Length: 534
Ligand code: HEM
Image (tube, rainbow, N blue to C red):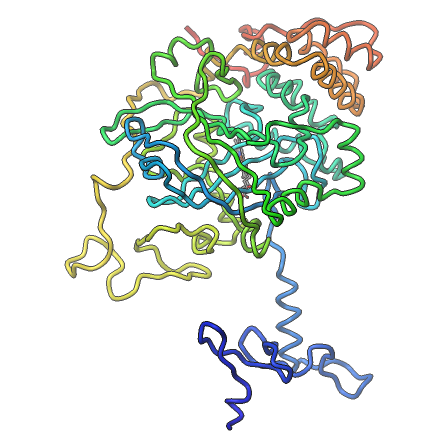
């Protein structure tokens, strides 16, 4: 029996382990060196200085010092789970996307739910939009449906996103509030951004204090395209419907829960899945053609508008079940990199200017957050279908081309080849026009759908919206901002506006905000309100 035999034993898979005296796996350095003492650093004498010789100490502390990566610039706090998506019926007529071709086909998914504004350590039940991001590991590459639990958004153009987020997150001088909409900067920006009024009604509703992730809807928000094998396109909006139904807590409950258990939503998902109570959602679609788009009351490219389900019913096309928690939060939930531009053949973008901007932002931010171009090598981000290309090197490269050839075309007959018939074909949309910075006139009505949403609520839900607005605006110190918000509310619902104004102690009601379509004078005062001239 050699020393070598005493130190090693074979695991179940036949792999060799170094073993400690008691048969447990032996603690090693990252270089594999066995560690004799992990409790005491190397020093001169029992009370003397520590030694640079102590490579184990240095490696351990060095690694600890570098544990943190930047938190997401938005949606920093989140919680993920694995599961599967099951297709109900083939959708061959409308999309060639492989995951929708066979009834009963199961596609693995990873989902990350999140809040938007709070930092990584903030409380789960902040009043906030919830992210609902799904990565489908399809046989033709990853599809990321990076949605929210609200079907619309604050702004119509991605160029405004940094301002929205700066205004929503903690103020730069005082670094608070950490996870609340209730502050001057947020309401200042909102009150100067009429296009956000529909979203304001939704975020002041109980939807932003969900009972748990399991009781939330999800939405792709934008209009996307399905494209079939013949290259024909159908517009599509995506909806997730929770099997358990939609439920929220009351604001008083949210406040108490945040104090008693800031991890309430995490704990809920963890416990549900660990106890075999797997949450489930149906994926539903609204499908429409160009003619519907041309005749609909609003522009289907405007992400601040819904297509009401009464006008265009949703069609269930599959179900998603979450049945496994990550083995390691950091490796999977923290390192997962969702990107709207991850689409398989058969799914394409519309010209929604928010979506088009997002398609740049997500790749860019992953480079920063995950430290280089090889974040797709991380197991949580790698496709689960075979994938081959000539990308090489860079920090932390785990996959490099093997052999001599790392380019194409090549005459050695080596390496992967492109395929016009099987590869991703962008929908051949007809585009022409002048290069301009203009907002279409069809994006200009900011109040009708806000009113429609408010009036669709039950009396109790309307009361909650009024109470939420009162609470939020009562935290705003600048009176002019409060009044500017009341002037917008007057365009949505007069009773709502007067109720909130009275509760805030505003004596004289302001005038309603300027009508939806800005005048030429508005335009001159504020170029941000630009509209098309015709
Ligand atoms: C992160 C949704 C608009 C930039 C996220 C996440 C979701 C989401 C769910 C979290 C992903 C995760 O769990 O890891 C949305 C929706 C939007 C929207 C539904 C509008 C409809 C935008 C816009 C931009 C943007 C307009 C920029 C122009 C980002 C960035 C992250 C992010 C930089 C961080 C990604 C990361 O570090 O992994 N978004 N977002 N988002 N979003 Fe958006």
